[in-house]
Image 1 (tube, helix red, strand yellow):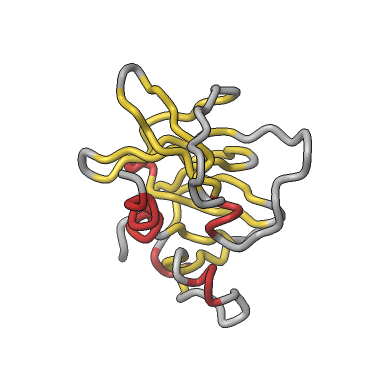
Image 2 (spheres, one colour):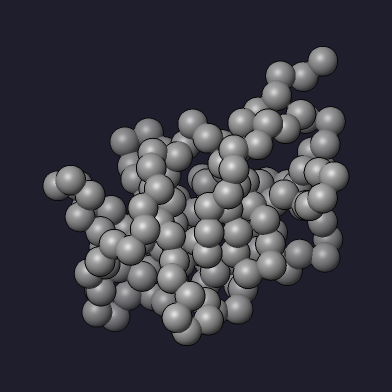
Length: 146
């Protein structure tokens, strides 16, 4: 029997995603970002988080999804990898779900190649397909300015 994992869930466009709850530092709404001139489209700006400068990434851009509709506010999911922090712009944050490895499968072939790079796999749940974000791949995209 496998040990269940706890995942913080969030939505982007029509897709549900999950990230290990232990990688999530906090969730913020309505924070001001400082734009970076000439930065790639995936970098929304910088966030001053209690004296620490954190890069904010637009996950819709990274995952090759449609741009966020005008007027739809983003939430910031602050994630950590060791001493590094990133702010991920997501549409909404959901519940913490507990999943078993039995429901896990590799990323489907129907995902575009650009998106598949950032997805570990999926959990087939009763009412949804939960895409598991590959945070290591996302962190590697942020090295452009860090």
